[in-house]
Length: 179
Image (cartoon, rainbow, N blue to C red; front, side, top):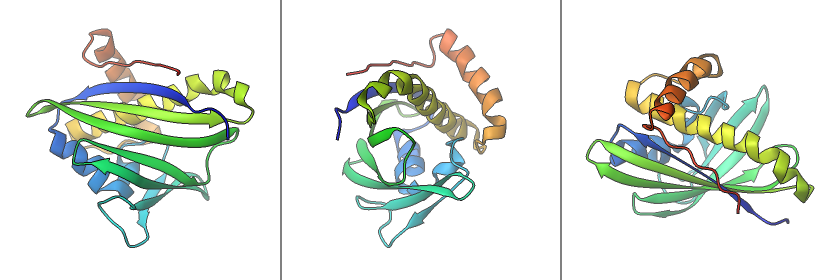
């Protein structure tokens, strides 16, 4: 297993920390509601709403990955590991989600993605793609929570334009760090 590289992203969402926790953790198997890269998703196994919960995510017709919540700290943070499947040239991949209430209806969401690639030098090619994909996940989460609408590959271009305009006005933050 190669060295894990960290990619950090964050976004402010006009929603309570509790609403974000409900959408991202409690409804873990419904990630397709806000992640445009997921065609469908559902809970698997008997564990729900806690560490050990698993989901299957269809990333293309008939191709699935399985993810598992491996840790959580109250309603502040949780970690998700890919436990089966994955992307070409990717070794290990997991993500840590941190929620910080800025006020009762505004929350900063930080995601740290930890990845290794095969071969290791591929990280330099893959980091831009991974950054873009996880930023789409975050703006999809923001859009879904702020509008109640579903996010799909078909409407993601419009959503991305909306939030890139916000980013230009410094309402939406994005930061990349490769450790």
